[in-house]
Amino acid sequence: MRIIKVTRKRQITLPKDVCEKTGISEGDYVRVYVDENNRIIIEKALSLDRLAGSLNPGYPLKNLAENLDKERKHGEREK
Image (cartoon, rainbow, N blue to C red):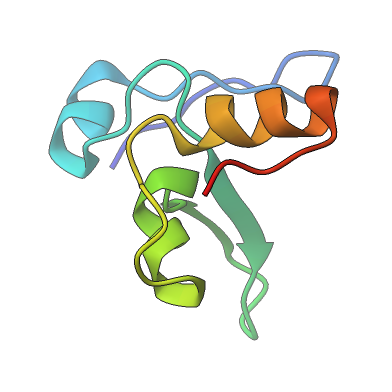
């Protein structure tokens, strides 16, 4: 167990060993919520690339976020 300080902007820094153990790296997203016992839970969120195929099988997963952004800008979807 670690004790870490909350900054005045309510931010915390995750210890390196915790990130390594959980696979959290720079640029990843985490979910933060409070459970029924008022404990704060922080867990790694799945990336867009990992979630993509679950709703639209067959759509290319590699670089999904970048491709969707490009399609939005051009107003079209590649087939």
